[in-house]
Amino acid sequence: MNFESTKCFFHVDLDAFFASVEQLLHPQWRGKPVVVGGVPGDRRAVVSTASYEARKFGIHSAMPFVRAVELCPNAIFVRGDHKTYGEFSEKVMRIFSDFSPDVKQISIDEAFLDMSGTTRLFGDPVETAKKLQDEVFEKTRLTVSIGVATSNYVAKIASGLQKPKGLTAVLPGDEENFMLSLPLEKVWGIGAKTLTRLKESGFNSTHDILVHSKKLLANIFGQAQADFLYNAVRGIDPPGFLEEAKSHSAGIESTYDYDLLEWDAIECALLELSEQLMFRLLRHNITGKTLCVKIRYDDFTTVSVRETSSQNITSVDDLFSRAKHIFRKKYEAERGIRLLGITVGKTQDANSETQNELFDFGEKKKRAVEKSILKLEQKNPKIKIHKARLLSNEKNPPEK
Image (tube, rainbow, N blue to C red):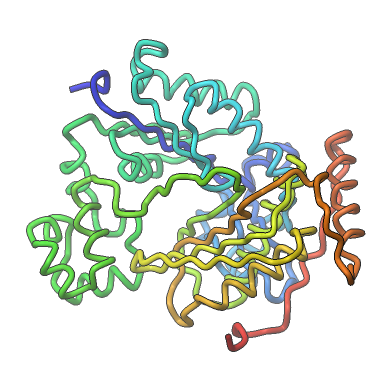
């Protein structure tokens, strides 16, 4: 069976995105281990992205930087430049929009494309995926890996199986067999703690999950995780896997290869998301007063919390501070985090702001500086101005 008469989705993932951009901007780094997130001596930094050369040494995202330096002291370590990464991301997303009218960007380096009904326009989806890979590389010199399937969830897993520049297609009708061919470790959404619980309960394969009822799974793991497991092993989008993007909002989220457990890693992740989102707001000249933080734990339970302020978000520092404040309201300590997201809702044109803060505390100046940095770098991409990454000395999040 082919995709001509059924739904078809692409999940497209930029390969080792931050590190790949750094290697692109610094040709002398190509083929060498590059680690983004900090430099030796940054006591509390964590790895954001590692190039494939660095991954051979066991370095991975969310790893404490001290450990990364121990594993590969000769690697190239950089703090990263999220404004530049955002610019590359927008170029890639524009290419995606040439292939599909429905592109859901879920993070700076990945998106889902609804390719249903496009076979008459582009032809076979697998060949179309190859064309998409070629066009991204031709226009940006970056590589992407693509999963093709009838569900977003299966496409997501398929895109990660043959990196870098991988292409894996799961044909209609093969979704369940595809999932049954995977070890539990390859099932997206099953983190380390969930894997341990599964094996302790006698579930050693995807087939072991498939043959049991949802009611039994709920008795053992709880309803949310049971719903996820039941759908996942059948190749069906689990509940809430890909929520519809809300209009008049701007958001970003990131799924982590390893659970975030330490406050240092969580704080760094929130800062990175805040930087990426703030410069997207600046590029589109929009702002908002409503902020939502989304947390997905290692057992796939998802919570979100929303708060509306009387003042518009003005700067990276402002957004980061609000995100941390809201995050603490829902965070359950010692639970591993698989995904974090922040969204600014009810956005409006930044030029239409009518209410001024009684006490500004320098926020307007920060916003003006950040807008100037953005304009300067857009005018001359060779100029790189980095924001200092100053984290608090908190070892754990303060009490709610």
